[in-house]
Length: 311
Image (cartoon, rainbow, N blue to C red; front, side, top):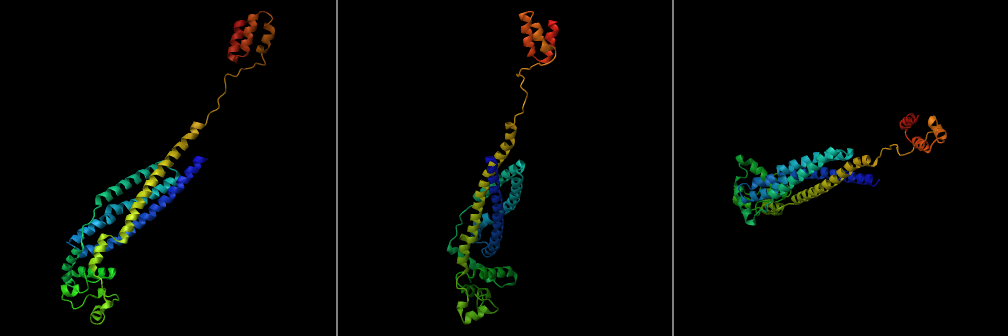
């Protein structure tokens, strides 16, 4: 009974862990996709600068294809583990344990290999101004779209201040993406009437903060550590469940005993010539009485052989 309760408890814990694997893997994929969108924008603005290298070093562990593939594979492994736990199948549980071990080793190696502290300073933000003169040109529409998207998403304008647009380009006012309330011509109206309608903070500090790490990146790191801890716990529980199931199947074979007849029980003859032999033969000699007494307790074949020999 105690072993059955232990197995039931282990199965419940593995059900919960597999559910956590599904949820955390889905969260990792979702957050990674969210970060990748913003990362592509930053990499476009910081191309061929030290900022680009720093951004790649910071976010490569989070959006690396190996990590994405591992999370997808972990969802499949969790399904196999759920089926193995449900059916108490030793083969599926063994495969589940080996897969978790391989995934954990890949995650650990990838984290160690891609970890590096980015070296970036605020003075590197000035290099972003070199891309501003290309804003609005026909062959740099992709850059124009990137600037507008970044300024709208991060609520900033220019590199240090919105006047960077007036210094680095031939524009008379900033782009409309600098407006807090965007509409066609809002930047012109704000430039001549109310500058407070423009974003007062530059995009340089925003990019610097993004490279140093965002809340999304911290959440992704927390999910990665949580998945690793859950994998260690799941492997330990799987080994325990395998041991309990394996020895639980062998114990009935060891405990059951087959009942066999006891040959040491003396046989008692109550009919036939052997029953009358002691009464008729004991009157002759003591030797014949001793022989007949011993043969009465013998097996039928031995009894018949002794009687033929005496006669």
